[in-house]
Amino acid sequence: MESPVGLSQIWSGGLIYIVPFLFVLTIIVFFHELGHFLVGRWCGIKALVFSVGFGPELIGFNDRRGTRWKLAAVPLGGYVKFLGDENAASVPDRAAMDAMSDAERSGAFPAKSVGRRAATVAAGPIANFILAIVIFAGVAYVEGRVVGDPVVAEVRDGSPAAAAGFKAGDKVLSADGETIRYFSDLQRYVSSRADTPIRMTVERNGSPVELTVTPRSEVQTDGFGNEFNVPVVGLVANNDGSSFRVESLSPVEAVAYGVSQTWFVTTRTVDFMGEVITGRQNADQIGGPIRIAQVSSQVSTIGLGALLNLAALLSVSIGLLNLLPIPMLDGGHLLFYAFEAIRGRPLSEQVQEVGFRIGLALVMLLMVFAFWNDISGLV
Image 1 (tube, one colour):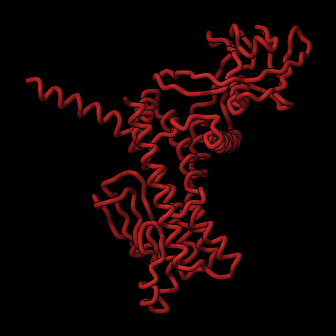
Image 2 (cartoon, one colour; image 1 turned 90 degrees about the vertical axis):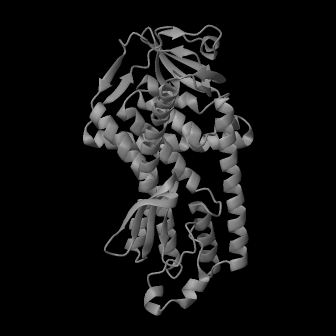
Image 3 (tube, helix red, strand yellow; image 1 turned 120 degrees about the vertical axis):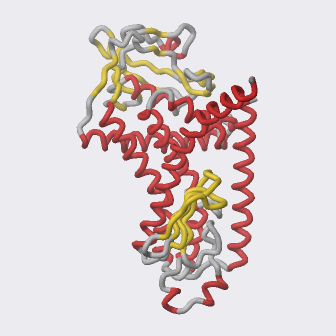
């Protein structure tokens, strides 16, 4: 009698992870590939396959233009295969191109100008950024934005803020000359400036006071038990909710918020990559599908808005990842096209083949590293 109960618990527990993960990843992958597909069609390129996922097809259909739309068994990505592509990575199929008629070649991806090919490739990551803006804006418009005044309720003992001379009741007006409207603005500004002195202006007893504080990196734990290495100064806002409120946004304000939030996530992600390369951040914070599934499950318990915001954040990350100048990724293709535009002719097939092999090796190493971090985190 115990076995069925155990299997039921395993099944329900698996669904808690799988459903939010598939929801988030499917949205991101679909819009990324839709960017490629729509711009490719606009450029006169025939799409043979539009796939969400890899591997065996689960369900699919053919549209009136002959494109096969399908959902595949392995939900860890997707692709659009254009006419003239050898595989899902858009490696040109030279033999197939030589066998095409002039009419067929006119709709083949490799036969298009370098500008049209570059636009089609760049459209995927750009779609990721547009998706993030739309999600951030939509959630903020529907749910409003929780904001709090930048008033200090408490200064942690032994913190950089205490050493800098902050006092409870101070209202932060600016950081390095940048206006601080909300407490979240202060948190954002500090989050990317570990060990970097920040000049702050605070209002104390009606008068401005100039202070300089240097954030230090500390390991903090979120409400789900996940640990993060983040810069902190030791300033605490009111926890009783008296200084926080929900601010309604107009459609224009919501879009502006979506743009600013997407820009912040983009710059913070780029900064993080740089900090990993220089050793200022631990690379163990880079996660793969298992960690995404875990975080998706945790965030889904907060609500749909939080899960959508996570999708927006991951959409930016995937957009940036695809822009890395690594063959096999969109950025690698754009790099080849840049060389082609400068030279006036494509790189040789041998050079491209070596590049794709190196790119594949790098992508596989990154995947193995991410999986290792995922497994290590679970252990």
